[in-house]
Image (tube, rainbow, N blue to C red; front, side, top):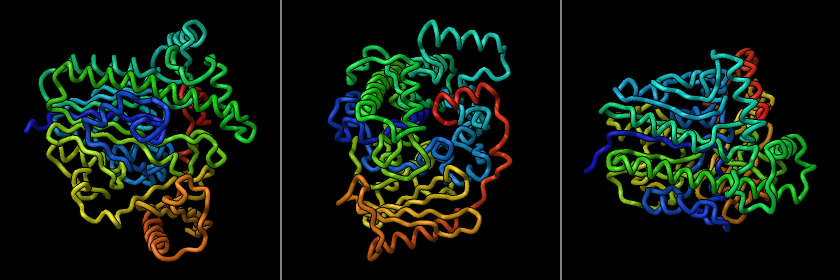
Length: 439
């Protein structure tokens, strides 16, 4: 047995599973991930616990349900896997550029090095000059750090370590809008677009989805697929970098996404706080030195990522709601296996809950102030994988799932702290959030 010495978590923002080649997509968007899937434990039915970053990422890093953070201004209010591994003697680092999981929301807790690409507390003139240079001279845009730079930073950090275990978290933003793949990776679109045009189109898709033309819809998808192809190449560089350093022999590598993205399947674009499959179904690949490659069709939740990391590091937490992924593989009760997801409504007055098994799904919406059910809908995902036919009359398995969801919702309801949510943010964070479509 090789054993686990190190842990690497590679998370990707807004990457839906059904746009990946190894999940059956007609375009060759992800040749490397297809190769990686053949060498990994690949989970075909992995579901995120939420549909947007503010609730999905803290859940991914802690193994706890999203409302824990929604109820507290979306801050990282519980111990993360970084906290736990740091306390166990691991060197820890994180590299990304999403303001919602930055130091401003306490996500640096437990990390020796935490690079969120924000200039908070640094010279404002330097920050402004760098932004001007990137946007108007180098035409890089200003909305995120590219995967190539994330890889360079993280591998450089590894090279500077002394002996001893490490935990690395890279969060890649390339597949998050505005979509504009680098030159050479825009092969799926008939024309290239400038960063400003990409931003305008992305903002239109958010604010005026009903006015997006068929041609613009196609362009958005083409550009998104190009971003996937670029990211796929960069993930190859990252994994090759680990391999060249001889690290894959004793390192647990987990690759997943926080949520997906919509392209007008249900009247919206990007990832609003809804619970459709295009937002919840994500890739999940695990490279484990002591596990043979395997394709797993069982339904799992990315809440199991933290228990899996803890188990590999020789620990556990019985208070977490899900088991580790390999224990779930061995569980024989697949026929009744369910996963839950939730999202706080856009106005903060309702919470949406979903439960699904291999075939059926139920979604309910409940008011936060009194728990009253506003709506409930069922779907047969075998007959209607696109969730276009709503089932209003429940019986059999749908009734069982609805009852489970009632119980789950009763345990998870709580009020969003409006004062924390309204807290004034640094102007740099406000600018980033607006470009990324969060404002």
